[in-house]
Amino acid sequence: MSSSASTSASADEERAAAFLQESLQFSSHSHRPNPARPHVTLTFAQSQDGKIAGAGKAQLALSGSESMLMTHTLRTLHDGIMVGIGTVLNDNPQLNARLLCSPPAVSQLPRPVVLDSLLRMPLDAKLMANYAAGVGRKPLIIVSSQADPDKRSHLESSGAEVMQVQGSAASMGQLDWTETLAAIRKAGITRLMVEGGAAVIDSLLQQPQLIDTLLVTIAPITVGPNGFGPTAKLPGDSDASWPAPSRAQFGKDEVVVWHRH
Ligand SMILES: NC(=O)c1ccc[n+]([C@@H]2O[C@H](COP(=O)([O-])OP(=O)(O)OC[C@H]3O[C@@H](n4cnc5c(N)ncnc54)[C@H](O)[C@@H]3O)[C@@H](O)[C@H]2O)c1
Ligand SMILES: Nc1nc(=O)c(N)c(NC[C@H](O)[C@H](O)[C@H](O)COP(=O)(O)O)[nH]1
Image (cartoon, rainbow, N blue to C red; front, top):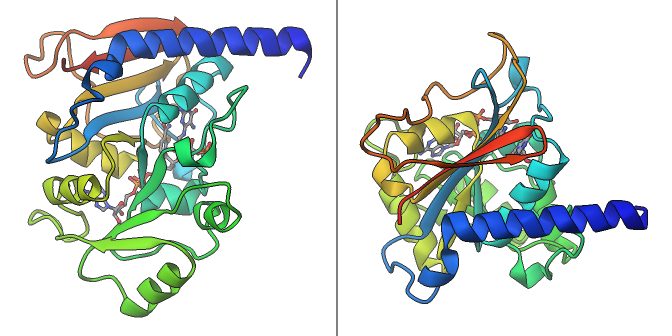
């Protein structure tokens, strides 16, 4: 990177950090974490027609460089980062902060958490490889009682921690959020960033009382009806269950934050 490019990247990072500090005000509650569950930040990037991926779940670059830096800055403000197993299988994410000019030490990265009812986590997922190579934190995989015990042993001996919670009564494929969040808090995570995918976003938005912060990056792109996204809609202006949002422009993208103080 040239020096002028890196100067503007670090200015973008500083602006993202200041915006997140003002919108989330984490420093004020960092001293008294809730003993029952982590602070939950649900976040994702969508097109203006509500899609988070292309046809057939194809990964889409929705965020521009400025809002992507904001997302990586947001990751560093959390000590846990969750995706559903659908996102691991589709995107093979790393969930780290590699885009920042000075990425934090491994111990300061958020710990990856995967919601994986049936334990489909691949042994060679990047989250596993990064931990083995000492460049990522130990993945925490949350499973139901239906997870295969042999696969569990293999993943544990490859470095993952596997925790079992109940499936929700509504659908055995989905873990119960209250129990899952309690288990994650018990594992020491106090601020959890939930990055998706669509099924996770939809099921968590059905329990808005469990979401402390909802942060959505909206890219000025129309994906069209073949795109893939959650069915839930973002809170409307007159929705009494959410506070009024704050909004900021990051490059071409709008970032909207609903934060419960
Ligand atoms: N644009 C973005 O910000 C963004 C972020 C993440 C993922 N994505 C995209 O989302 C897609 C993957 O989404 P998806 O819906 O297929 O998978 P997902 O990541 O939402 O994972 C769903 C799986 O999680 C497990 N699960 C366990 N408990 C659950 C619960 N309570 N609620 C929901 N799921 C639970 C189930 O096995 C379920 O099949 C990919 O296309 C990916 O690129 C986009
Ligand atoms: N903020 C954001 N903007 C996007 O345009 C986009 N496609 C995602 N997608 C999020 C999804 O969870 C991906 O799987 C991870 O972003 C991949 O994770 P890494 O980059 O490897 O850390 N997120």
